[in-house]
Length: 150
Image 1 (tube, rainbow, N blue to C red):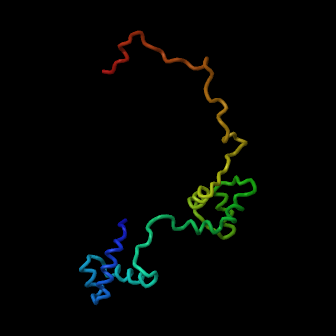
Image 2: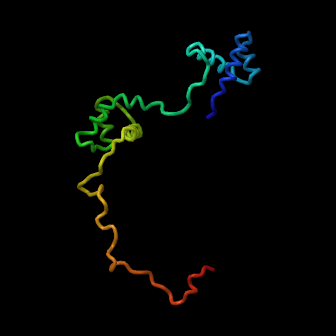
Image 3: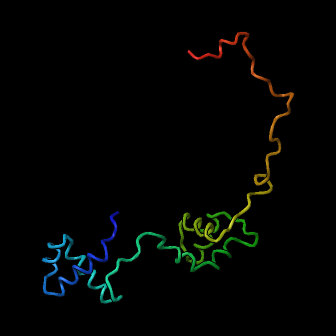
């Protein structure tokens, strides 16, 4: 995606238009489109100058964050429901959010959920390594020259 044009260029173009050039003539002179000049003029009227707005970044998280209480309530009293269960509970209230939107909400608000304790998935493994007597050492050949690669 292309970046926005500089504020200096915008000022020069708008000055040329204010001195009597049409949008098409100014666009041809400065190699910009007439529609861009129209947008810049509208922005200058609205906010006082034609500075470019910030590009990129998060555009939609405020829609999800507006329903923070409902999402936290949908997590349940133990705060252990899965994202799909949370989405289903929210859907019953008429709130429809995607899986990723809920996942990013949890990350933004540092909400973590423990795994199922009945299956011991959140604990360290029961047998981290086999007993020494059960593990065989690899057999070595009698000659040392077998280690050379040909």
